[in-house]
Length: 239
Image (cartoon, rainbow, N blue to C red; front, side, top):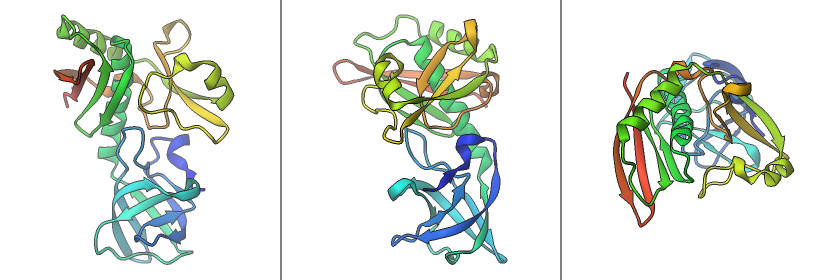
């Protein structure tokens, strides 16, 4: 398994590592990585690998077999040899924007307390699909409530529970179409707020900002009807 450094510190922008494998498709597997792999609606990270005066652009990152995380180089890039020590450097601006959008979407699920049937995260905007038969009467009120939560500058922390504890508390899972990653014996919970100020707690393997104030102001886009009962709600970072 690749050690997921981003899970312990989402703000780690670079780190050294050793190449443990090269995939048949030309991917690079490291013993540890700051690069988040595509999953849970969050895109895989991009950036640069450097070694021995050479560098390779990393176009994206995906999950491999057996808990491996695979860095996918840009087409035509040189590849390091197995055993080589490399320095991995994130495209931090894009990753940080993913973190801001991801945390904002958790808060969107608070102001719209309905089951979530899908979602996606980008560097400029994100969206959630809700089991929402009727469109909301006042979109501006939802946007104001969302920005009020952001402005409270609530802490964003994580905890771990066992698979069995999650199965015993199904209400923690808001998503209808994507189950949280299980099978490793424990599941990560992301908590927004603490004690009496806690506003959200749900399973999530993605990266998040440390406090909601870091998100900045957001706006809600159009609310689109997707099927008989689903509606898609988009949010956009203001800057």
